[in-house]
Structure formats: structure tokens, C-alpha cells
Image (cartoon, rainbow, N blue to C red):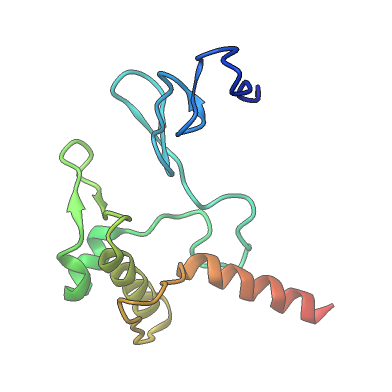
Length: 138
């Protein structure tokens, strides 16, 4: 990976505001373009997930959660090509509702976060707890 050239005008290959090559497209987190018109799925579940984490190796079933929980249902959209459910992760209400549904479905806990607070992602925070629990057993 090459560093951008100095501002001395050596090369106009870089857009200094975005710090990326001109013409390079930023597909954002969780998106990766593979072929024209196709998107690869980039999962947050990976080999660093704790083995006892119930979210390890599986993505949430958005449609099933929406069927169980009304507060989550209005945030779930369905992809017409794959008929899989998804949410808009840039919508704070959708993310909070997803975490509420996961807590209720997985642990039977009623949980709510005010809209003016950051919402911790349940699978990742559970990972921290499980790793700490393992360390305390040593």
C-alpha cells in the first residue's frame, strides 16, 4: 500500500479529502464488490468469536425475529432477490431494536437503551464477557 504523495504536486492520483485513489469506490463496512452487480457477504462472525458464544457462526434470522417481536418488525426489510431479511444498520432505532430482540430471544431479557445513548452490539459484548470468564478460570 503506497502512501499518498506530498502536496508538492508530484501526482494527482489521490483525492486528498478522502485519502483514496481517484476512481476507487468505497463500498463501506460489510460490503465488498466481487463482480459487476454482485455483492459478497462480509460477516462479522469470524474465528475470533468465542466458541461458547451462541451467535458464533450464524447471522441473526431477521425475518424470524420480526415475526416474534413487533417492536423489531417495522425495521426489517426483505431482499426481493434472496427473500432474506435485513436491517439498515445506519438507522439507530433499527440497531437498538435488533439488540433488544436478540437479548429477548437468546436470554429472555427485556432490555432497552435510550435513543441518545450508544447501543453496544450484543454478540460482540458477550464475546468480551466470555473471554474474561475464561481468563478468571485460569
